[in-house]
Amino acid sequence: MKTATFLTLAAAGKLAAAHATFQEMLVNGQSFGTTGVRGSSNANNPILSTASNLASEMMVCKGGSKVSGTVSVKSGDKLTLQWHHNNPSSGSGDKDEPIAASHKGPIIVWVAKAETEGKGNAWVKIQQAGLSGGRWAVDDFISNAGKIDVTVPNLAAGDYLIRSEIIALHEGSNPGATQFYNGCGQIKVTSSGSLSIGSGANIQSVYTTNDPGVLYNIYGGSSSYTIPGPAVNAGFGGSSSNPPAQGGGGSGGGSGGTVARYGQCGGSGYSGATQCESGLTCTKQNEYYSQCN
Image (cartoon, rainbow, N blue to C red; front, side, top):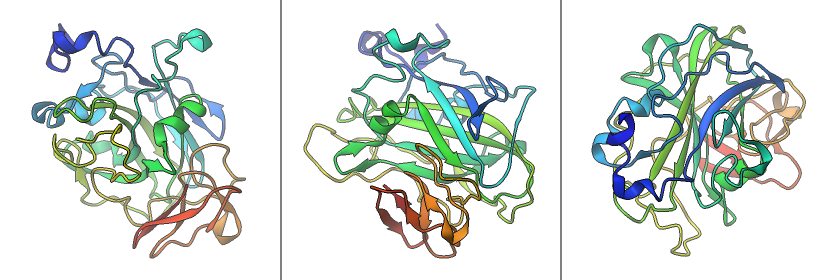
């Protein structure tokens, strides 16, 4: 069985409802269907956090290979990454759509040059959300019907991979039992931005089984959580000339716009919007990055 490396027979029963898969991209609300979406080679099953799994090629794009299409975007566009529990979606009658509510944890978005195929030190982190005010990123993901909204950074023109990732911590107190879900889309940036990707993170070595953000007990009553991996890369949080996005990604034109949940609102070298949408607070995560939560 192809998924045997990732799912033990003992865990199979527990994982029966523990599925999610990236299926669609939208730009400023317009759907491009499955264009540019790399299909997963192990369906909608998770990758468990054993050392061998975290170092495997499944971490790159869930085993998905290059497809013929790409989705064109410009700096500042709202790119929506749509996930569902099943493929195709089983709709509103599915109690675990887009993912089981128990699967609490962070959501992270990365970008890499397409020519790298996501291998080696290819990835820069452009967005992340974890635990804020007792609410997990996955809670907001469910409320937003499986949509992860991202403001396209001011990238140099070219072809890129966009990779979204969910880390489900409902069994995270057990080493090797945290569940990783990821999926990649192929995008073409048509605007001429100033940000180029140099040496980034190797997604096959960025996590370990015992990282504090991987081996973590969500039932322990802690109000703090450290998202594993590097910080969001300086300048890659994104800004926009579009109206404020509804949902996840940051938006706002220059310093006069507003920023939606999880969008960048400050940091060293950042020149975009700094005012969060109503009800959100601009929270400093490090010297280079502040985010609306």
